Length: 156
Image 1: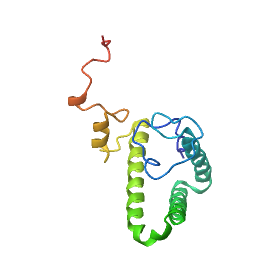
Image 2: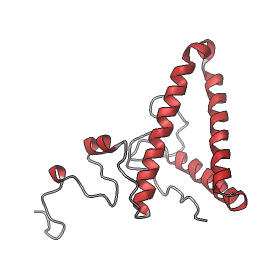
Image 3: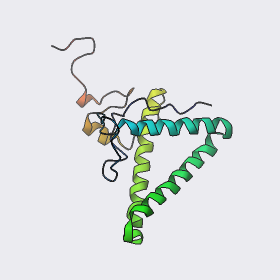
């Protein structure tokens, strides 16, 4: 059973977690992605725990347990911060969290698929990647945006 690889450094893909709604304490210099490196330390610690648990319980069970725990924690965070508008903002919160999860899942399918040499199909984020000039590793640039300088020919 393969373990989920740790995130070695901040992603070059889009910022997905804290850009509009969170103001985490800065414990280090922000990376080029704009996220505090301590964010990735937290992610890696969490992945270390889930990898350990999945060796004991199986991948599917720990995947479901992780999603359940994340949903419970995010509901707690919402209720702790929503103030008096809990009911009025519930749908917006659910839509936001669902969109963020789908985006993060797309990013990780793209990245892990590329790292493992797997064709994971067309990303729902392909248009955003192209607009930002980002290409998932292992995927060729579209012809219209490809660098005209061949890798074998040094740029002058």
